Amino acid sequence: MLKFFTTSLFIILVSFCVSSCTARPVHLSDLAKSDIDMVVDLHIQQTESLMRELTEKLYRRNPIQLTRGGKKSLSQAMDILFNERRDLSFPQLEGKLGTDAMLLALDENYTGDRVFALMTGLVSMIRTSYGNKPEFYMFDELEPQALYNSARNIEILVWRLKSRVDEQGRPIIWTNNQPGEEQNLSYERLFGQLISLQDTMALIAGEKWNRSINFIVRTAASTVFLPVGL
Image (cartoon, rainbow, N blue to C red; front, side, top):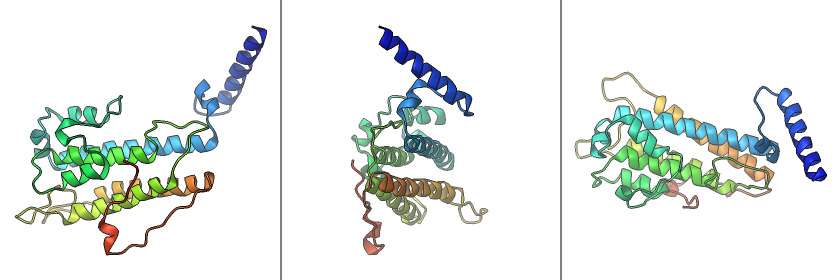
């Protein structure tokens, strides 16, 4: 009993001392995290924030997709995609995740909510690259190849979004400006930030866990999505 009390007191004192030296309040769970875990957590938070912003922008750019998916509002779509249970297996997408869901979104014969399918694929792919963990602790590890591949897949997705058009020559999913409109590069900025975060985390993970990355030589085959673990 004395040993337990002494250990508990030590943990509380350490937590108090650390929190007094930092701007952010420190919780007991933080004591099970290394510096690299804090970095991973920050990257996860940033990617989630960017994906939320991208989802909102895509729906505002493609409002018809909300009605095609039977959703009553943008907030409802956001709540479904970013729910606390992190469950992204939906019957309307036949349970498709990752690049399979992205391909479904860009299929010219698909009649459902393309934005929902696209973002389900993107969110599930990026989360998979982090081992489907909402935060990291001392004994967790990352696979740098999955992070690197996810970055390349985002590049491929951007290219496909630009090149996939309907019979009238209009993009299947609008992102950039329409003819006659002012140039809009905000989508490229968001996708670029996601790519940069994934590439940076891949290099950090490779160095931390001493794992090599198979860097892909960009050829004509670079338009094919790479495996991330789904």
